[in-house]
Image 1: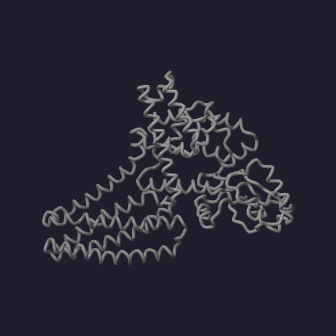
Image 2: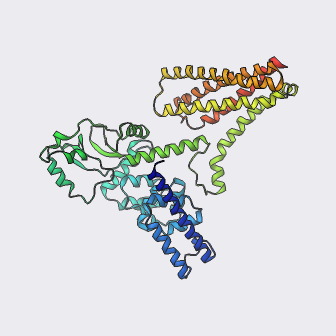
Image 3: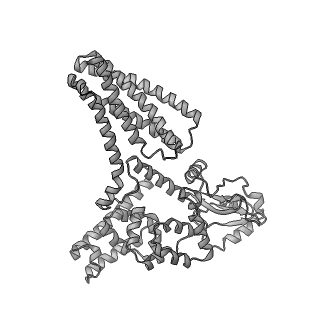
Length: 475
């Protein structure tokens, strides 16, 4: 973490601490929750409220969103009521889906309309799905024809398509004008759209013919024509492109903005780096939640029932897989009774196999996300991972086999331990490559549930291999 990142983190924590202190003082002053005491007639209380409003006014919308997500529901709504209404829309865009739902539920129809009407078309499209249905007709009626068309255009695409993330605010110029004309044109703007690093060059049919980076505009002679300076070869994207693939292209080519064109090459919008960063963050959060068995982002202060509904599915699956593993052990009860050492050693075989399988799955899921795996490379990956598993099994299985031999003075037990470890690591490698590839082939997200499946395979398989070998060779 560099110094700027560290100072930003320290500043945010200081802001959160300041809000928390004001809330504590307010609760102490009125003797009840802040949200219930808004009518309290006290100079001290009003002073605290004023300090809270001033503090929130000075914060960036993203910082206010972060603070709201960190507060329990009653304090969250209390702070939300102290935010200026003209900032509500920007903050709603920044908070998580679960928190946004709770904030919107606390707003009446007039407040919702006032919050979202100032937003751009692409921002409105992000919020529409979370708004109450009764608000939508009035909202759409309040938009002008161009805004309405843009919102409907963004909503016509799937959430994972680039068209759903397009920004319509951009600067276009013609190639048959001079740079001096372009400079005069730009001076007419109060400000340029955010993340404007280039101007889009179009012809009279609105077909994109190139881009003019702003730094090229500044360092070239004003007498030159745009066509002489512009870059005709430009990264362009289609509205139905996969948004995550576009995010990878932004990272690969260090893009700040890029044009979005239709099948005829007509410019219809642009995509910006901030939208790509938000997408990558959301994808990362979603993948992390999926690995933990959560179906969606959960408000950390959600009700017990809401948390139960979000978590029960994978717990039920884990229960089933654990039961299957227990039944595998049950098949070898007589062997365990004859050699108690098996009960102490078999978790090692299953645990190491699960860890190895999860390492393989993590690598394969990442490679699938980056489109780095083909049919031929999948076969090569299988061979490579199986060889790695074989070597690891012989080395570490041999090590634990020697330890088992020394602990229990039974060389046959050590050999069985080595063989079981090696076979289970081979099983983990085979499943670690195969499970995510098969899931993607059948249209499933390989990040969702792969770790649960590999753990089930290596637990049940590890127990069966170890206890089966022990039954054959030791009892």
